[in-house]
Image 1 (cartoon, one colour):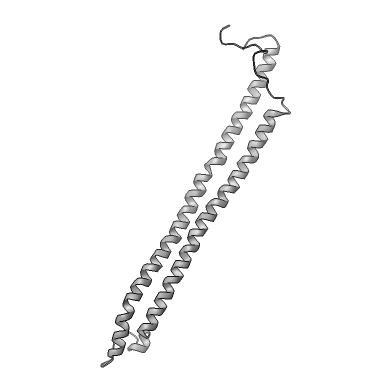
Image 2: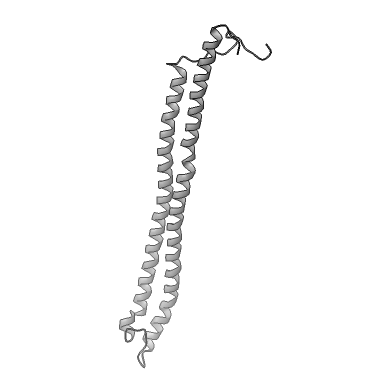
Length: 164
């Protein structure tokens, strides 16, 4: 009939012990390798951002320490509550000069927190996104298995003399 192939026209199907099984096993191994590679990439990228965030936060803490040193520490400047004693103009000047450093240190520490958050987010999103690849390989692997079984069945049926 129209559109039907005979066994002679059909491409040769790999033997059960050969090509199809080999393809399935290769895909099975590929899924595992992709899963491991995806985990490594997501941890590497996310970890790099988190490490940068920790470094930037540490830098902000350093700037804050310098600001505290310029201010002369609250306990040394006044009565411990940040209030100045009468006639302590030098302490007031130091505190005034330390304020911009404290503002900058807060901004730098916030930027460090942002990098850390970006690293966590990157790790989660990359892990999920790269986790799609092993699932896709599993779908292809199951399709190859179904195709292998169907081709083997059709070839066996066709060799008995029946049409497709």
